[in-house]
Length: 469
Image (cartoon, rainbow, N blue to C red; front, side, top):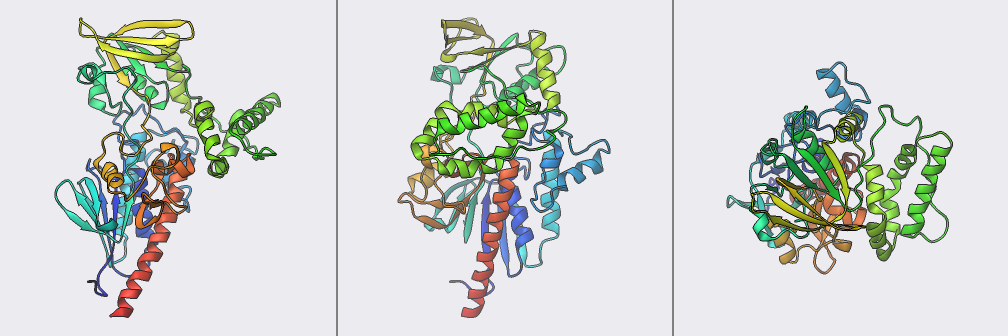
């Protein structure tokens, strides 16, 4: 039974960027009545999350400072914060990710300090493991049972999937690093002679930067199916963004990919920058994704997604220059191939077999780092909350196994496709509906929209309780 003084209770699970932005926006959007907001984070770090908790100052943001405000209505917020601490910082600065983590921590603390008097905001170092009572109670690893009128799942991305051909005997090998964000394990590889990195995306680049900070470090071999790196930003952004015009006729994966590529080639032929075309498509990616039939979405993932991603998710210019140096010195090489096996070797190293266009090749290394990218299936990495959510039929996987199934507001759909009523998510778990939903510019808008929705619901519920009394 509730009383007119019962607060509107919101539990946000996860305090990386998505969870922190949601908490900040809800505290800013709340207009009256009692609110009890609990932010759960198992690591105890409220703000940075995995993406921005790296201790390595070489790890830079992949977007310049002008584009990294956590607040959609204050586009200069991060830039002003950064400039106050570094007078040389400007709109085009690619700041260290550790600095952005500190920004999020301070933004959360400042917003909480300015919250309304009827707001109780709690940061809890704990892990949500199950949601019961139809979504009205969150159970935690410590044994707490948190009542909730709304639950927001902001758990971010899964850990990488196990590489193909890696048997159980490899997983306990001291030279195998399953989690590329385990900074202590990565640092322990610095004295090895030869390290294989499975994957050639942005996470591989982070690992390479950490293992080869100066003149030393191991020889690095990055293996991926295509053997290509993400492209780089220019030090100066494109002079303009090319307006996007969708292709005519029925939309298919192949037609869409060809249309964008032809526009980029035409821009380059006219003396422009292909980046202006890619950046022009960005505001429309979610609309385009939702316009593709499910079969065409599957085709896009299989044939075109990686090519889009290496042009869309670009590395900072300084990082690109460092990688160029490592490759020129022979300290980093790229290989294109499909990994077949990883086996412990008699000398304590690891033997790898991978298939290329010319046959199967063997490679002996001292260590292997798994940078294959996050597994898109909810609960695939053993997360108890998501695994139990699906087992309890409160949620289901999204289309094509990407994230969770949601409605347009980020409200979870249960096993029968019905909106839950009080369970929400944002960020990576909405990939099934939105696909491109893992970067700050997209997530900050989702956080603001969700916070406004929750604030309106909370105000209405508080008013109903008062009227009933």
